[in-house]
Image (cartoon, rainbow, N blue to C red; front, side, top):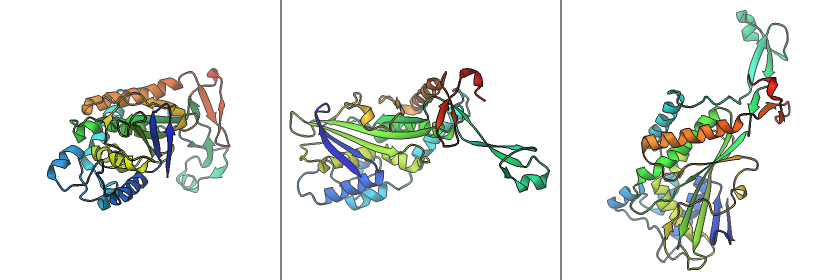
Length: 311
């Protein structure tokens, strides 16, 4: 599903996509019907692979490429996660997941396996204490200059994926949004194209393969550039990319009430990605200090007094 509109503050077009595969399919279908110059033509040239990272041989292959495994990227993301979690380099996020507890005297259900094993058999639901906002929106920019290689482009995405995975495993519901801002895409004065892709919805399990694809160099230079033709006007070129802060009120695209975290666009290299992911996770953890919530029976949250404890 795609939402498109003109935005005065953006000074151009805004396109918001809710699906990685859907964006690729719609872009490919549009490009196959074009007879004039397209921003990113699919050409079977070996030289293109160094610019995109993964080069489809035709627009028919583009949607299929969104499901291909990129083992190198996934290994790097997992390495970032391992260094942060196993290396104990950041404060441990307080788990927000519901847990079970067992008792010999009281509970709502009987665990027959535990009864047979001679353990406490009454089972009950533990009212997990929580701190701060339960939903987080992580924003990462995918813009890159023409001389930036596909692996350099990916490091900020790797940081975003790692932070998303760590926070989700701690029980947060994390939404991951990619954005790009192209300048001089259309005739002046309203020449900007702002592209937004909701790569992951809050609470949905992390699909590392899909996230790696959506934050890759080839996705930027094939699908994002190609999607410029989906708007109401015909683009002049792929224009230049703009690393500035989102030129739109982020509340318009982020989930209501979520905490907003941005990955720096100048994140390069493995250590740079580790540092960016660490900063994002710590930012969320620290925002929770001094604000305590408890899960109620309806799945909502009620604020607790500080002296009620956090265990």
